[in-house]
Length: 132
Length: 225
Image 1 (tube, rainbow over the protein chains, first blue to last red):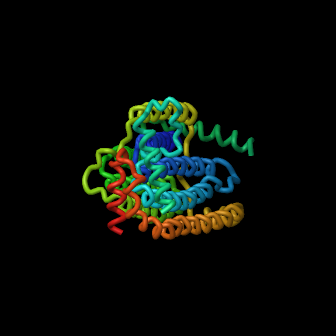
Image 2 (tube, chains in turn orange, yellow):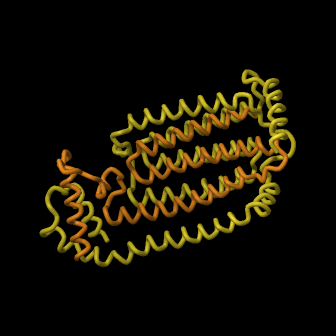
């Protein structure tokens, strides 16, 4: 098999995941897109490891070992990420990334008045929740 | 090692010259067809408006990748992929979707406003990556004959002879992730009594009318608890 086939498929999958990370608004859909990118890297690792293990003598099977590590780390990442998303949803009532703008710099001129007032309202609500 | 690599690269180059792109082998045809299904599933995953359907198309993508691993003779990775990704990660994602939002039907706000910029970035990255990869590995040939490169025996030997220390470190990392997930969940559960005491006081003075799109849903949720 030509090495170009898995390499090109991996590149296309990675860019699909990149589009998903940039364009999606729900946090869990962003996590799904991150999984797509990780899987593209895994396919690349496996393809190059198979190629290398057939051409070189001692290869340590590093590509497939790294793929196993990546899969385990991705599973841990999804668990932690979902715990964070659920905690944010409990506190804020939304998992919409565009609305979680408390640390955004609004600037002095405040060109986006609605956004600034919304964040101020959410911080006051949060303070009320903390003091209650 | 470098000498062997040079010799091997010349060998693969000659093998690739005898096998052109215009006369694909059966494995390549199967790889292409499954790859089209995988890529289509990925594209639907990142573009569909129905959130649960996105998770289900992710199953198609991950299963297709498992088949690609099988075609690359990496059997162990393929079954690990099926077990962990299709078996547990997708179920976790579905749990997360259902716990944060029960998306019956279409949700029109699934895509943010900068999707055209995202599309431009993705297409530019895809063009650059595919160009570079094809230019670099046009003549490289994977020899799939003979013993499987990714059998369980080969993987186990490599993992427990050369990669023992990362393997053990990974188990510590999994333990840390487990503890972290529990702590994140428990902190929210401990903060809940103070939060549920709040709604009687919250709307009175401190919540302005500007956040009216967010407050009722939160209080409805608190009341539901």
